[in-house]
Image (tube, rainbow, N blue to C red; front, side):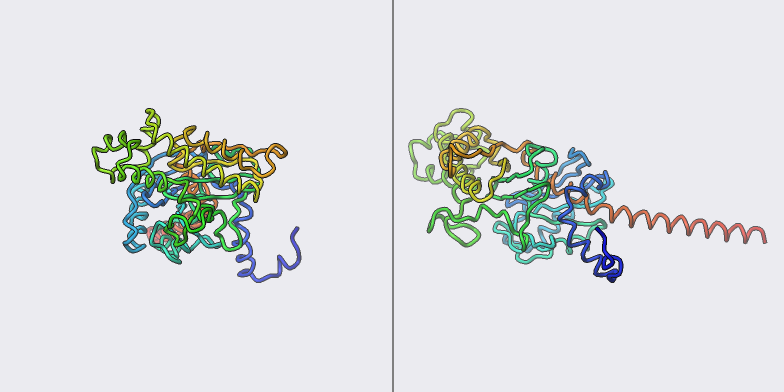
Length: 382
């Protein structure tokens, strides 16, 4: 309900209040957001994916390139983003750009505070990109973007309490309650991959040891396979032969492919990753009690080779098992494009600013043309 203070407060303070509350009105706002094409960018540790997405979550065009080496300056990654957006803008009428960044994004959704797999440290990504692109820019964590996409268009439709786990280079996470992404006080909620599950365990790029993503992620899967191959283990002969002895060529998709073909070691490695995944989500269920866990990211392409062991481990480690409702554990429906689609859909919430500015420019131009036409008519009559 509006109060006298709402109407008498200075315009600047009222505007600040509106900006602070944008994130709390996402569920209502997405229904009234303009149905215009927007660009979503998903930045991971190994790839940058960009796509034009319509209001129904359909991808109209998609581009993909490798992430520039993390030893290079952040500007190199930003240059890559700008090039992709400009390329897509040549063929589409883009009204806003959403960035799903693999890192911790501040509560204002401007700065990437820290990215374990990229060289961003307190990087003002939104402002830098907005200064180079002629449309509004929105920045969010890539897992938040993926969770939003799955809630809007995928496996999370109809769920009021959803937790998203993205298995890629590392582990990302997001919490969505009542149609709102829960970002926490400082914007960095949902970084489940860096929960320490093994004290003194494997070193993580974040600087700590024993993080969950060191035991259940694409990096963990490839590391284990390469270690077995480097030790010339008999169980690894199949994959060694597949890569012709070039152990560095072993990749996550290759392991999944060989597992589907029946390679015993690759099946076992995916089961190990899945079991660690199940342990982690059982802990999250104890803390958050969601109705559904959506498992996404590139590693989720293994499907039941991964999700099946995860469900089994989840049921085995769930606190109060047998005496409480169990959350569903499902694979994401939108696949590796979820982060890109979600970032684009979230960007649609700020697209109206561009549309208003564009409409004002058109109106000014029309007024000028009318004025110029009237002056020409007056001159001709004289």
